[in-house]
Image 1: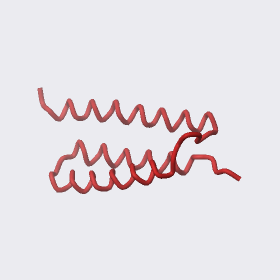
Image 2 (image 1 turned 120 degrees about the vertical axis):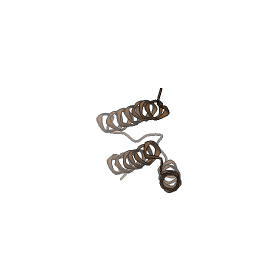
Image 3 (image 1 turned 180 degrees about the vertical axis):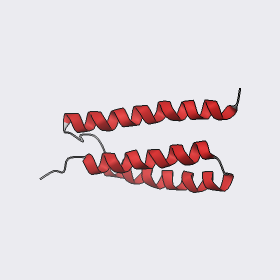
Length: 83
């Protein structure tokens, strides 16, 4: 079995769970318990992993980490603001 298939399947599972979480957050209209520091840390880690993946020329992780960064940004943008 091609190892990339395992990587792409794992990527699809991870991204599906993240998209579901963002959708739930939007539907509930709450960002309760979602820290701004989590967003900052996740975003910085994603940028680092994207750079690392580019250096390794690993498309599974380039795409996965780019999508994770997009979901972090979407989740932050859709998070309700207090007062």
